[in-house]
Image (cartoon, rainbow, N blue to C red; front, side, top):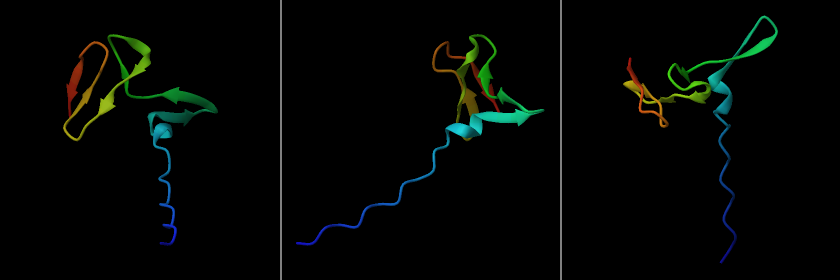
Length: 58
């Protein structure tokens, strides 16, 4: 039995939560209740904080 071909790896999506503005890195999608350190998970119809339960509908 031969070896399987390796699956191609997907590119990381961690950088979609940041934007470059004026030469500095800005965070986006952060929780307004928890602060800048906690990101909101983005679903197709809402944004949700896993720590405090905050939710925004799109």
